[in-house]
Length: 488
Image 1 (cartoon, rainbow, N blue to C red):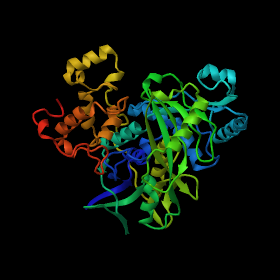
Image 2 (cartoon, rainbow, N blue to C red):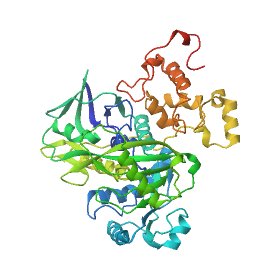
Image 3 (tube, rainbow, N blue to C red):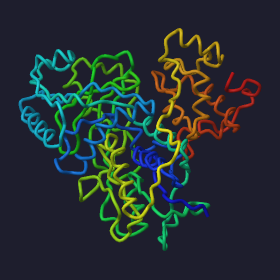
């Protein structure tokens, strides 16, 4: 039986943030993730906004963690080599009924400590964003708002944690937890992990995990959000995230640039019962579309390259983040209900939880030689021609383009497979390299990429999946394929 000081359940943005924070100290830490890769749940499907903090209820944990997270995000992204674009954000009032909401949001933002909030008129709005609806009345401008890449952030946090000594177990679900004197036994399929303290960062399953120990005191319900993703030929249509006025369930639909140069619109917000239902619906996509074109009338539907949906973990009855020791079980700490602004708040919550662990008796001794910085993957497409030429001269595989839509090379694929956090699925490869993320959505590059992955991992192509759970691309090879090979 393996023994640890701290076991973290879940490797999304929440669990990855805690792992990185704990890696500063002389501790034995393990992260256990049920899926085949980090960032496989809520983290992989959201708007990627680093929120300024004007929407959260003043005095709430969401508000406090949002503000702290927003202030440290730029530095954190610089340390981890993750995209961060502090462009500011806009909340636009298109109709008279929305105008009063802008003042309300500004008031909440001031109460929360957001700096620089400004109500701007139509003229200033159209100067900043010429493609916004010309009938818009005005907007709330939050200069501290930004956008990033959520899965790259989670991957970077986890890579940095692993480089600093944390351990990561992928593809294994916690089936039961037995509390014993001095700690907990976490029962997996074929082994048991022992830990003095447990952090429950299990996302949509957080209440189920907590119930293995005792009465959770909260319930998690899935809330689905659907999105449109547009081709890079629309780059510049908006320069910053442009929100519609908020609703009781969400911050409103946003039309936003992405860190990779696309335009994205969404989400709606629908409470559902199925914890795994990430299907898109005609009704939901139509709602997002109508709200998006009300904001940006020139948004061309023909430039959409895909739709997708994600699930948020909404906690009740708190309607706030659930963070801290579970009543009667001081060694078991929840990090649950981390819906929006969870991406922004996660690093701040991680720091808070480490303090709680110390209060609960965990000795924290700083680690000598702890590395704050992590170098990201080389992205060939973003380099100058001279930089590309130098790479090709040093490694000819940079001259072998596999994904033409996104200009992803063989060398990038191989580097992604050799990083500190294992990449074992094609979706994981897409998140790291953008292989298959362009117009054709992997229609042309998949066969060659499968061949490269199989060769590098030393497995047959029919062992490679899209995202685990039996989602295999290939079930066998025809006789006519012999002698050719998928990597030719």
